[in-house]
Image (cartoon, rainbow, N blue to C red; front, side, top):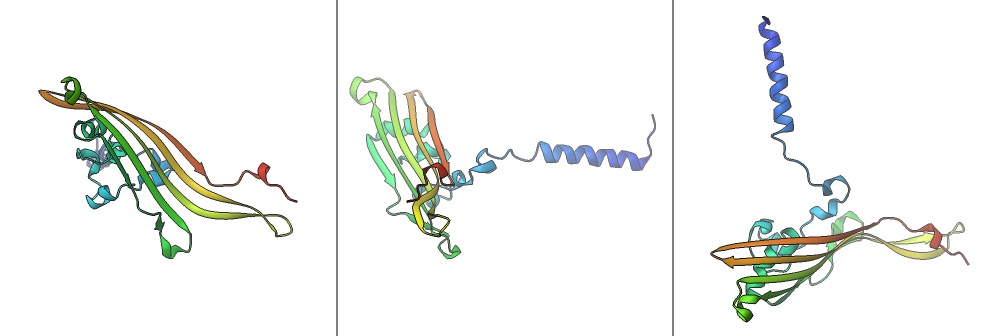
Length: 193
């Protein structure tokens, strides 16, 4: 079957465009769909490192948020650590919206090599990251304030990790996360006196 040059160019352009748009474009993280606050780096240390934090084995409890396996490596040299923002950070203070950002992580590690001469280290960590959109008032029909509530996005997590250090260093981790997004008030709780 002979095709004219114009058709061959058009078909080639369409096929190349399809592959460039589907294969060369990286997949978007799940959080970009609705929970954009998960893309905000919760760690001051990570922010200082240009967010290259997940691939670096560091001695920080916040590293378990980005890479759960880092916690096992953390446990090889650390027993207890906590990292947090010293105060709630005003988020976009010039925007006229009273948003704040807060995060905290605590990690506990146990290196069995120190105790039983077994080249395994265990770690457990808890973390909380919260983006508050501010306090809001619930008003009755007559304009009187009936209640105050906070709109927020919050994630709490627990990470477990095991690391092996016998000729090769390897670590495996798992994080169980609970995500809450409270963006409106439950109207059933409104009581007007």
